[in-house]
Length: 117
Image 1 (cartoon, rainbow, N blue to C red):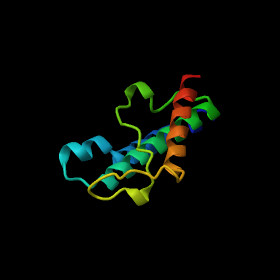
Image 2 (cartoon, helix red, strand yellow):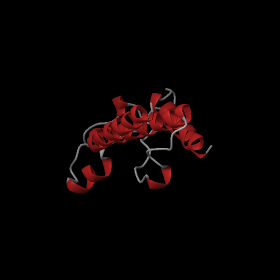
Image 3 (tube, helix red, strand yellow):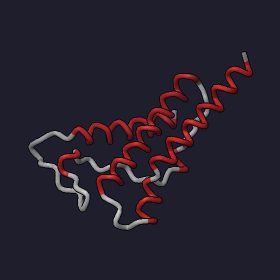
Image 4 (cartoon, rainbow, N blue to C red):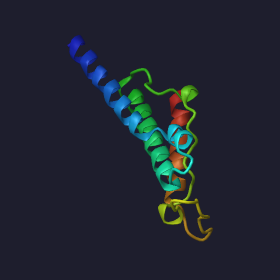
């Protein structure tokens, strides 16, 4: 039983490394300054989704966190929906329309608090 849990945890770590290597938002902007803005935002969203899933798994299964907020240097995604982001720039979300991404950013902040519990 103990070996099975350790192997599962090893696979979780491997899956996390593969997912994180796919989203690397910082390296994308440093290597290629002309990287499309929409691609950078998608990578930031992917990273923070992985972070939220990691926090949930840690709280659910009582495991130590795989990603600690103190080690994170990825900025939060902007609270602007995809329709207002182009390859060149991030537009301004209309004030009269609710942003779906604002809810996601709020969820990220709640998971940041949950990590501290």
